[in-house]
Amino acid sequence: MTEDEFPWTASVRVRTRNPDVNRWLAQALRPEAAREVPRARADLAHGEAGALELVISARDSGAMRAALNTYLGWIHLSLATARTAERPG
Image (tube, rainbow, N blue to C red; front, top):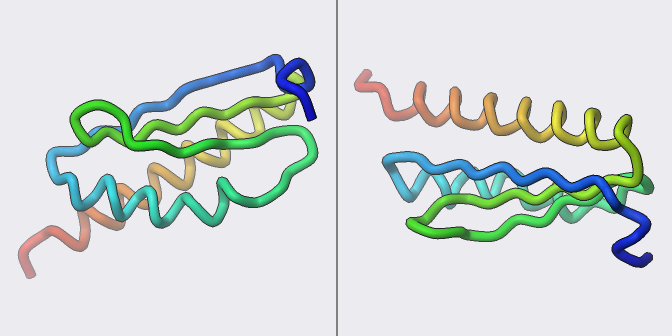
């Protein structure tokens, strides 16, 4: 597939105070980003200051909406889980 097949692109940067949480989040999202999906794809990287960079490319606006909603939901759930785990018992 060529880049022209995925003209829609969105970038999401997640940076937390705890770099361990960013690493944990990357581990949680990596299997999903590696999955082959016909109309969208996602790439994960570590950005500046330890931020997690997620780049989503899609064939059309519907695929972009679905991919963004899915990844943002997973990020929200993962960060909520991390916050709960960090709370003193």
